[in-house]
Image (cartoon, helix red, strand yellow):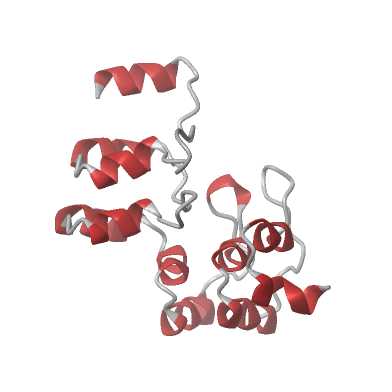
Length: 161
């Protein structure tokens, strides 16, 4: 792990992907049940999005039955992001009763970015009903509509065109 820390300190992209599956270090650490590495990568805000197979690090930990890692992800991820990852409508509604619908998370993404990217149409509709910004941009200058189109989430972006 010291080598990983050193590489990050030297400027290596902590979210770099490899192979056609586009695994990140966090995906691999979750798959191989490397708790300390997962903890470190979460602490430095590594990306938790899907690889090209549609798997998140959280999903890999669950699929591989790494219960301790799955619990760690659940502790570390913001509750609304976890709700979107798990398609938990009640969880997102509960958060929105007290939370900021336009709060920005990692990489300046909003909940609408995350819901659109995952193709969660019902969540997108709920966020819009709660008056979220419709075209916020993240640190890459991408909108939720861009992520929906990129991930071929047609149900999410058809109503917008």
